[in-house]
Length: 169
Image (cartoon, rainbow, N blue to C red):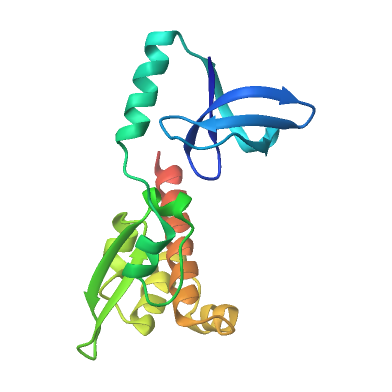
């Protein structure tokens, strides 16, 4: 049996047939029907022996499925694609005005550092980390909503820290 991983969702699937640019697949450990995906959507092709295949199917069957309803239940302001959820961490934080907010981030050191900060303070922190003025940052991201501003500023800070670490190594 051949298995592969759907790159977008990190889902393990069994390859049933390949025809041209399409591959017929079946989700491991689930009673789902066959479906077709583009060949480029798959990665990690491996051939498994029967015992290893049974173990993979059992492992996939024990994982709880992440549903859109579960995501919507925990979020007011939109839906995060379920395939991306394993990369992120949901949390509740107290804002400066005393209100509790629900949000989602990567849960890394930068995210933990920026969580409790107001947007103005996030701009200042990123300005210090990148050497870019706050005015330039505000002009660059002013057209975005506050969540997108925080996300982009966090990504800029991650890049600056990664480049600083590479320069010292």
